[in-house]
Amino acid sequence: MLRAIPQGLEHVMSIDPEILGGEPCFNGTRVPLESVVDNLGAGYSIEEILSDFPSLTEEHIRAVQQWELALARKPAGLEIRAS
Image 1 (cartoon, helix red, strand yellow):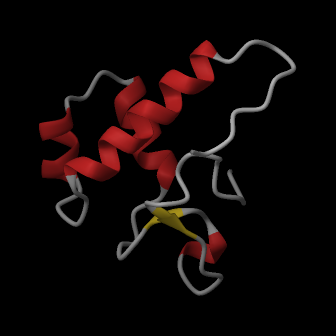
Image 2 (cartoon, one colour; image 1 turned 90 degrees about the horizontal axis):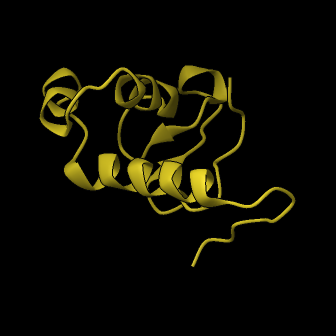
């Protein structure tokens, strides 16, 4: 379980110890990052994820997709910084 906001997702994520025990969630929701990552990994479309999590926006999902793409392209040993 993640306990920090990954670099590049700071603009759409927050951590509050009172919400899901401090697990990173999307701003203004109780939806954890891991739920969206798992759904994307399972091949769910943006529309399916938004249907399952109506408190999310397309911006939330696209931010996770961009973050995952950046991780996939990251050469070993280099840090990816938020722009």
